[in-house]
Length: 135
Image (cartoon, rainbow, N blue to C red; front, side, top):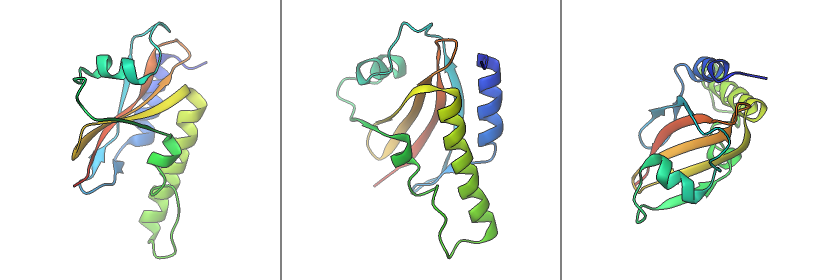
């Protein structure tokens, strides 16, 4: 079982130097939110946890959908790009191995806050925060 500190260290190492590609690229920042198993990972609770107003656009998607463009090798990619694809594949596996009940929430329009959230073995919430820019 991984402690919160181990989870943060694993996620920090796995995402070091990685950017989620959109119209503007953003880093993936690991987090732990104390929840002690009492807060469910839901659309209702994500607004409260992130202090987003009720009128803020909220979408939920699967982690595989969020990473769909960055986890597939393409014939035209150079070696550096192929290595990045492999890192995203490893990150996907890591998230699924260390967290349960993973959900992805996208909040906002144009500059979208993205929360990849799951339950750590401690019962706390953990994952990654990033942004996507879409016009």
